[in-house]
Length: 86
Image (cartoon, rainbow, N blue to C red; front, side, top):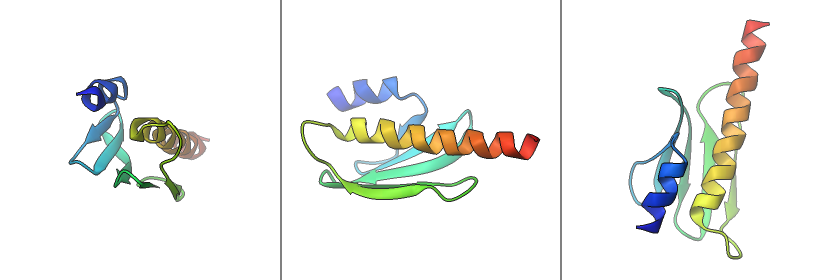
């Protein structure tokens, strides 16, 4: 239950199944995140490629990593959109 409560704080991240999330900006899919509980991987879907893989470590939850990756993907997306406007 704690995971679902935490994910509501990340309102732009939708959990697809136990290991996969989609990251949105408004209604636009901008990235994906997956984790098996030991490792995570994330990728952008829009703009220049952004992504990475790492291990879940310390006292941090999967949601902590999801939030950080989602922010990196969002920043990349916003940079891409602003660049196109210039």
